[in-house]
Image (cartoon, rainbow, N blue to C red; front, side):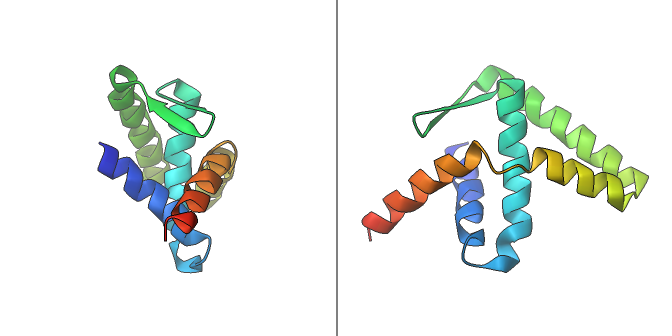
Length: 106
């Protein structure tokens, strides 16, 4: 679980310097924001906490929503979904903290 989330964070950080990673970063932000919106994840003082009991069902709901969008074949609907759920805050403040920590540990 931790590795999975760490890889998503890494994609978001890499996208800051490598534009080709932005699609992965957007997907990670969508997932993190969905987890936050459903209460499966909380960010406080640049620390995120996962509620394991809610994590699986939150991800299942997100998967169903994205599959419905894919099935519809509607690019405008997909773009709107990404704009709404791919917002940068509050995930971006966590990424700032992770990125600054990784820079100082080099």
